[in-house]
Image (cartoon, rainbow, N blue to C red; front, side, top):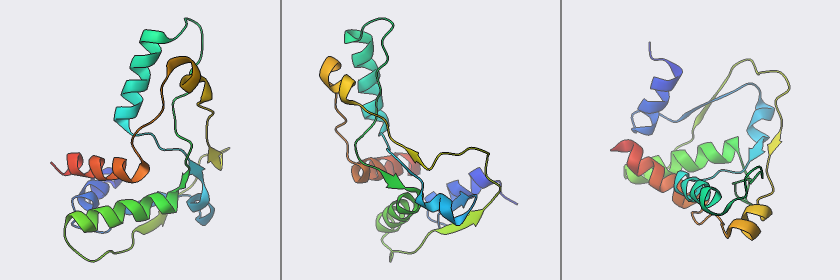
Length: 136
């Protein structure tokens, strides 16, 4: 039997539907901003070069996606890269951790003003790039 992580690997490689583990159906509506790793790296570099010691800089995006949207985007991109019809991801429930927030969105205006940093990669582009690299 494959672990959850290995099942996800198999799904992203295109052998099975993408499996998303959630605690309850309400988890699918939880939202957060998703930052592509290259944007995060550039943001961290800007903090090191231009940031003030002791200051806090939030790196993120202004767009939010919920877990269900994320799963559908990943599944559609996997299917597109494999040249097959778009299918639906599969959702599996497990117990939730206590005090889980329904929304994670941070204010990045200070990083924009003081560091001259803004994220450049859209959610969709980041998903495409991530899957291309992951599948290599």
